[in-house]
View 1: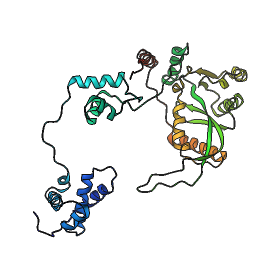
View 2: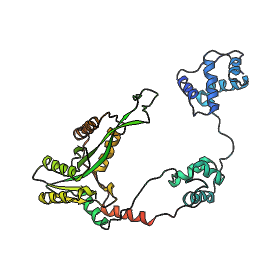
View 3: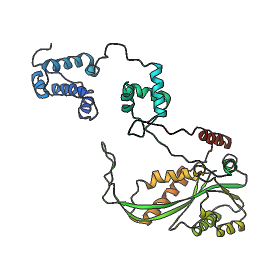
View 4: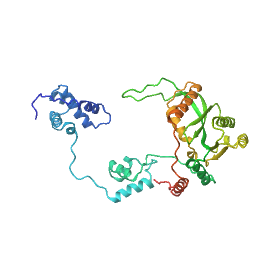
Length: 362
């Protein structure tokens, strides 16, 4: 045992780590106690004073001070416990996998690590390893919808063909609208990002109106033609088609990929397209907006310019959208690359339909 009243110094490189553990809300309490022992000793307190302040024994204080002196930070961690780690039988692994996929716990909609561990009598860590090995994630949920379009296969082949083999002397434009974009203003100023603190904003907001955005995404260059409108009607869509007509070289055919919105199929729109034969319209299947390339660009717009934006008026919202389009076209635009063939998509959809699972039971 060390001489009475001796103090120990902490290496300068270890002090920030020990202080971090002491402040942590997630560190194990035994590590926190040992870190405090070292820091108090480094501050000049005696073993007896440390033991009194931390309500522990002097033997405990001496133990961890000596362990640190001999092994550094590794010395204050617990040594590996004796005995062979508990092993799982293949039968138990199969039981966990079967329960995860075919049953749900009583009173719940899905399994958690703790619920499964308690139900099967194994540890949380073991459940986690089984799920990771099988690629199971019961806590996650995604949405899907199968298209009932009777021409689904034909439309997939048509649209994917445009992506993978664009026609010569033509532009392929993926066109859609993002409607009801809200100009939201927060009720209080935002707390800005700084070291140790993430940016924060109030959960409540003020609505200052909405706008709709029409966008045409050129798959060969990645550039976007955009138009912000007050309303979402066939009239505004026609105006956007006229803008596309003015903004593109007259000698090129225009292959326009559209979804099945009613505003795209009115009599006025159809009549205008008939008078402008360079516009070739290709419709995606119903309930298959993921096939429209512009949807990916809309996602970028939402993440980068809208979700965290603060707009006190619809003018500010419109200006922010135009700035994003300009920056995208000047800096970020790149050719759109589609890698999945039409046959691969159709096979994937068919496999998903074939694997529709029976609802798990309690």
